[in-house]
Length: 216
Image (tube, rainbow, N blue to C red):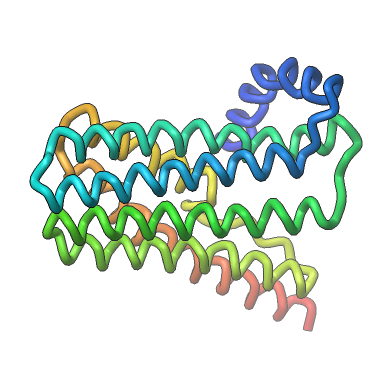
């Protein structure tokens, strides 16, 4: 059992009673997915407020907004775990639900990382805004390669920086930035995602090439 499976089992022990309560009152997986996306929109707004605060020279507010943005991303990430679990335990799985979940996951990453790009732009960290854009590109390409591979009937879950890891890293460094008033925490997280997400994307391409050669 790898570390992701172990953590998933631990988290399921905690959230299963909540999931059962949701089933009893009729909450659907698609609603949970949507609420998670709304949470990420709130995080985007907080990061954009931080960017504006940097532009105005209001550093305490800027760092506070970043910290709260990280906390909201972490909270929204719980919804991302609960929707799939709710679908399975409540026998509410659907093809559209899977599509809706994947689509809103991509939107969530796009809007939050875009807002972090703006944080660095307004803080006059130009090159870190470029690095954060590279993190955004890598994040989307990791998911794209997997989706394309599954369309070719290839299981493709290899790599170091999948969505759960990216969510945790982004949330953690944002929270630490808020607590320490040090933008290097956020910068370090974006560097990590930019490097490992793009490595993961090409790792998956290599994995798919190998699998296709086996089939041939």
